[in-house]
Length: 340
Ligand code: ATP
Ligand code: MG
Image 1 (cartoon, rainbow, N blue to C red):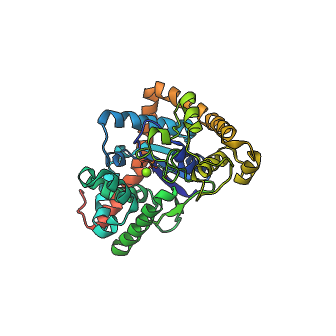
Image 2: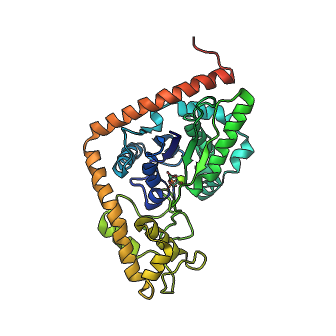
């Protein structure tokens, strides 16, 4: 089976609807056709301001949510990035193959750093895409007989980072001999970019959105309904898709369609003349139908911490076996002396 790798940052106490519809739902589906490696990228999470105890809690909650959504630890490798030190090691090597200007062109860095100001911005945030490249390339099988396709499911917001990963793979291969398969970006069918409920032209984001702008997977039904009812729309009353003039309503339509499998046209017809209120009420129920069971399963998983730790230890062991093999080849190719 082709391999797939993807990661998510433990930067909040819950994942959000954008993570779910743009990425995590596809992680679950891809297990049927792929050998999957799914990583909670805690090394990435320390590139921005954080607290140690919060990070530890969030890493566990993240893993529990992935399991609750259907990531199956029997079929797939689920692990924490910091359990596999080869991620940081390969990132160093790749960083030494990356131009300073090249890294400076990453738009996510420009966005995130301009919001924080230069003194609050870490060098780690700058080199973030290089660590992401290492995450991916550690698990790319070396080309040759039995070569396998390698997929990385990402949202639109990660396309540029994946392009850098491809460039670094090719640069490494060119300089040191064929080592990595350049991964294919795979933006799965039906993966939707979800925007902030209060600021519908900005992406819904764990770290950048206000609480009112985010729909959390683990949110209680009451507050969740309220938030959706208060989502920014416009002064009109027609439930129609118009990205330019009705960004808020268009975002809600995209969410509704992704959750209940209807087309946007179907929904426009269904809510013709009914105003925003009924539409939002039904949307809230659709969200709760999806997230209610996930919330309950997550809670159960968190109640048995020993079992969760056991699952993560096994995932780390499987990931390490692959990552160590890749790093042996990399160390040799770049000219480091073997330990004998
Ligand atoms: P942060 O604000 O800390 O960067 P995030 O919400 O962007 O958090 P990530 O952990 O960076 O989440 O990304 C996890 C996955 O979710 C990625 O594959 C990313 O493409 C996807 N994703 C993030 N936000 C959205 C969104 N608003 N719509 C669709 N997909 C998204
Ligand atoms: Mg992000």
